[in-house]
Image (cartoon, rainbow, N blue to C red; front, side, top):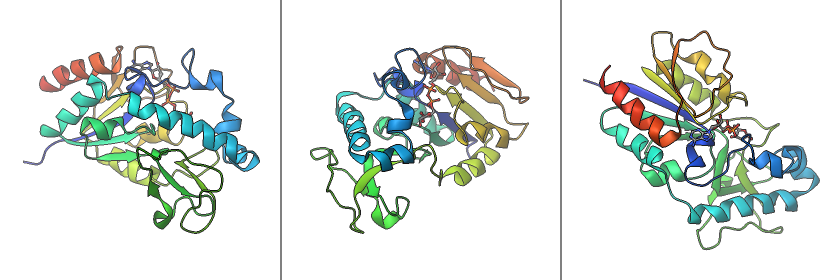
Length: 235
Ligand code: APR
């Protein structure tokens, strides 16, 4: 008997309890930096050094944080479900918690790539924990400036087709810690079949224009996932 397919879309709120700040909460990253300067392809072309250093700072935080209980509970769900995590997050906390099936929609902080061909697999490298800063003058395999392997606003989201496929095949769809502000990620819920239940875990009410019936668990990620597991047992 195949395990039910559980697809989980996570956002910055999933990592909030690990100490990584979200983007749009009060005190979030977009209150400290201008998105157009550090998270758009135009910003990178205008001032690559500023953007490279912004991601160096965020990357340096990774060794100082660890997965929260919510990340760990999601990894444990793989025992009873065929789980795929589709994350907007660029941290490696789902990996470190032990999840084995992860699709990153917006890139990965611990990877770097070519400025010329950012999505060419031959250009993508994993940064070593003891040498994780990128400097101006560092080169990708094709000789162009090494850049963060991050999907910036204005760039394509190569994994969105795969994520849509997964959403279509999901028996259960869970949304954790995302304001559903950013497309195409936020549009994934439209691919979920109407006979698949959707659960939304977030401590705050999320504005969500959807006709798809869904169960709201208005809690933080760790408590919320624990409650989700109890609800799934009653399925
Ligand atoms: N547990 C769960 N959710 C939480 C928690 C928590 N402890 N704390 C906050 N949240 C929720 C907030 O209520 C909010 O709904 O997490 C969500 C965070 O929303 P955003 O800051 O907008 O983050 P996200 O939705 O992931 O942003 C999407 O925007 O800037 C881009 O590329 C960036 O991937 C990011 C994308």
